Image (cartoon, rainbow, N blue to C red):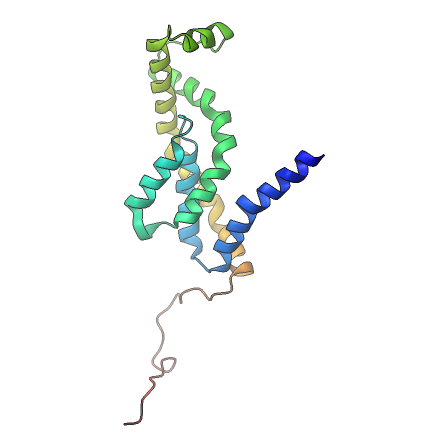
Length: 181
């Protein structure tokens, strides 16, 4: 039971609090949805341990077009999903390429650990990458489409900062402050 409490504390500190802080700052829902889609899609990259670096590269290349904290938090959220999708990406890549079926047996694991299956392992990694590359645009689109309405509601509910105006201000809404000379 104590482990569940520790897990809840960790989840609250690492996931919930950062997301609430992002929402309180009043970021645009479209930017948050785009950033979530980037973080989740890259977070599913089938080579474990590389997603943080890839997210960093994506943040650096996209600059102000993405929200860096959202990308990184969603990347962290995607980790369990990433681990569960490595084999489906592998099988999908094998199917697309018509390549040989990499056996996922204890004997195959023994060959990997004793470095006897190097060509087979490299080919299986290539198949997993191919499966991810084909699926990535669909994953990105699905996450964006599903998260945009969610972020609109959440930003409206938790934001303490007003969103930028959707329409230009009319002259009657703009007042100039004139200083006395």
